[in-house]
Image 1 (cartoon, rainbow, N blue to C red):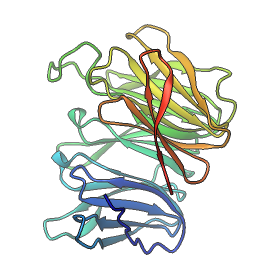
Image 2: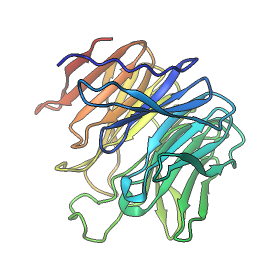
Image 3: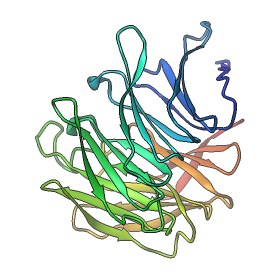
Length: 301
C-alpha cells in the first residue's frame, strides 16, 4: 500500500498526533500553540484541514480523543499550564467546552479514562501534581488532585483498564487506577477508593536513571497479568508486571535504545508495543514465548 502524505500547515514542531476512534480524523499538537484537525480520507481522497483550534499560549504537547459515546470531544494540554477540552457541534464547529487552569506549570501529559468509568481526564504537570477532571451529569466539571505526586514534576500519565484481571467485562467491577512517571525517574501506581486517590506502589529501581518520559498501561484482553511499559530519557524501556492485586510489581528492561525514548503505546490487544526513540526511530515489539521481546516492525521515516 502506497504511503499517503498529509500536509498539516503547522508553523513549528509537531509534538503529538492522535487518530480518532473511527480512524477518519487526525488531531495534531504543535509548538505554534495550535491544534489541527485533519481528515485522513480514503486512499484516493485528498486529506484536508478541517479546523485549526487556537486557545493555548504556548507549545501544545499532547492531544487525546474521548470515546465517541460522549460526542466528538478532544483534549489538549500545553506549556501554558492550560488543559482545553474541545467539542464539535453538529455543524462541524469546534468550541471550548471546558478550560482547566488549576496547574501553575506546564501540563505535560493527558489521558482519558476508559469510557466505562465516565468522561474523565487525568493531567500530569510540571508543578508536581496530577489532576483528574470529571464531567458531571449536569455538564459541569469536578476536580480531584493528587498533590506532590512527583514533587519535581509529573511527566506522564496512563489509565489502567476498567475491568479487573479475571473478571468479565460488564460484571460491574470497575477499576479506577492510574500509572504516572516523573522527572524523579520514578513510576508510581495510584488507586481511587471512595473518591480519594492514594499511592499504591512506587516502582523505585535502578533501571531508570533519568526522567520518565512516558508510561502506558496495557489492555488486559486475554492477558493473565497487569502490564505497564515505561520509557525514559536514559534510553531504556522497562516492562512492569504483576499477576494480581497485592502482588509486587516486577520490572524488566525490555531494551536500552541508547538515546531518549519519548513515547510508548500498546496495541488494542496489549500484545504489541510501539516505541518512539531518538529521532525518527519508531519500532514495534512483541514478547516471545520465552519472555524475550523481539522487534517485529521498524518504521522507516
